[in-house]
Length: 475
Image 1 (cartoon, rainbow, N blue to C red):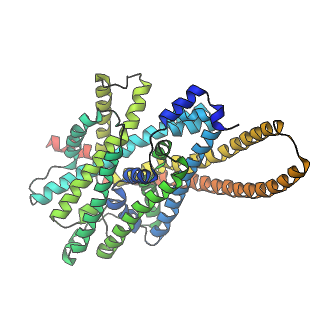
Image 2 (cartoon, one colour):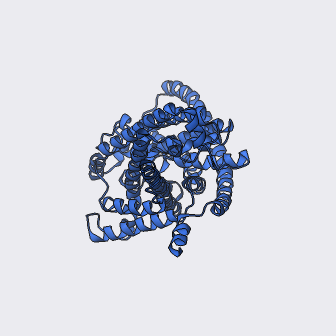
Image 3 (cartoon, rainbow, N blue to C red):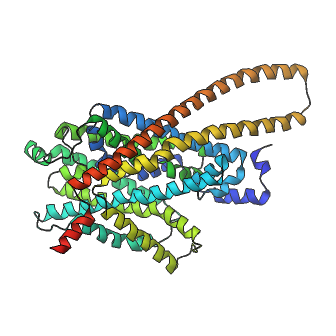
């Protein structure tokens, strides 16, 4: 029995209406590049360069696993629609829907919590880096006279973003995502030009007072968390897939999005290493010379990060509003809740000493399970559910089909040969999934422990904003 025949007529009409979004594969790639944003260009080079030659292997290994597990999630959704067509009605929370269909509602609640916590914490580096860029622009444009700390710029940015946070999620994101990707591309070009035109004297001055960890393994653990954080597409990939015209092409979209962002990163990283060596700061913008191109790049980065925060946090806001029973139409309750969450995000950012520490901690503790543990678990469970579903469909076909012994014998021989290769391929996939889960468990616990220790240690080296503001008020 075909999938469409097992859906009620009214439900089938609802599925047709809800899936009529016609999202092309090319625009899905644009959406993925928008999710990655400017971080691979601006902040990832230090994490990889600090690891030395092992950084090349690290980013290849981590990104390969992330691409594979993202594709696994896409395959899980396709299988889920095949065996349970009604899952299409849960496309507002697709990741949690997969957790529910595979391991029950309890895991679905855990996944929902991880997603909400990841979205909330992911906005903190955006806020910190955007405010640091504005402080940097103010210093460079006024010869260090306009020295407003980024601790105060975070409050200003929060006030600017607040009215935009009150708006609902835009129904048509094509223009917004396209503009964001254009900004990312412009930042890549401008930073590349700024690096190329720098002279040697300026380069030497920009590489002073760079904080580095003494051991390579420490840099590898930190780099793992940062790479996992910056290339984390998993909370969003299913939302993109359910809106695609051809959902089976999600693998092409994932590969295309990673290819574009990794190309931007690779070219930037090679040029930075050529000009600055191993003495790299957390943000590339801190190392650029005082030019109009560098100032414009910093402003564009701040705009893109604010834009990403407004768009990315909308899913968290909508989920909290649904839990509190707040209507989806514009109302004062939405304004109060979203403003309170914005204030809470600013307070969290004020307690953080450095944005890359947050990325590494979030990437290891929160993003790790969503990337390396849950997708393989979902996929192995979905394979079992698919086998049960296929066997049921075949039994129905046998009961309703007349038997011809000669044709049946030929058909069985061909089917057995085909099934053998399918079973072997699935066994290889399951074995690789177990390998990913094992690596994910080790790296998640190891990276989380080290990043907590590193954060506590760095607080003594550079106190967070809230401490600086308090000390300033006492003077």
